Image (tube, rainbow, N blue to C red):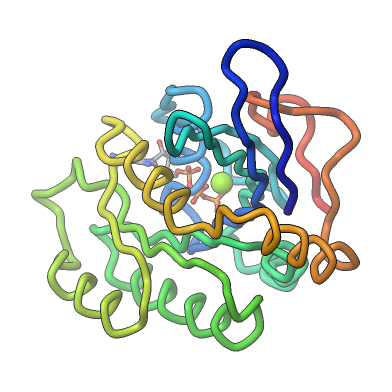
Length: 217
Ligand code: GTP
Ligand code: MG
């Protein structure tokens, strides 16, 4: 999207990218983003209504950071028709499944296919097997998913929003895959600026959108 230099001692380029989270209900999309943004976890989290918006900055190196503008979509089937609004102008997508639910991996694969057919052709996609703290109930092997990710050109990571395992690494790996080149960024802004949900006027930086009103837009 856009890059600007912060004022102050730590002058750094900050590149903004829209990121969408997709996946079946209850796989832990909201839990992952709350772990990433607030470093918190709730054993009882309400299912997302519509979508929720978050932002978080990831330093890539001493002089460059990525600011993710995150749309956490609702996984319940009744919200499925809203998803294209969120992925249409996204530069990165995190497709989540639950390692204890093989049906959720099948669903993740259908999201990947839909993204590859209908989203930006340059979209960076990460496949994420969440709840890897529940290893004793594992139904999907990491090897199977790594093979699928390699064949399909996806990043792959297993995470636990509960313990925090690999959550920071996941977003750092995505940040490193993004095109951090201002000329490309400007081109992207031109191509993507006309469609999809825009940022809310209320800045929800670092806070959980659900607590300030979900945006079912
Ligand atoms: P929707 O909003 O309905 O699409 O669901 P979601 O994908 O956002 O799932 P959510 O984050 O609401 O998590 C669903 C349930 O799984 C909650 O009870 C979480 O506490 C639990 N959960 C999420 N991540 C983990 C994890 O890594 N490990 C374990 N053990 N539980 C998790
Ligand atoms: Mg949710």
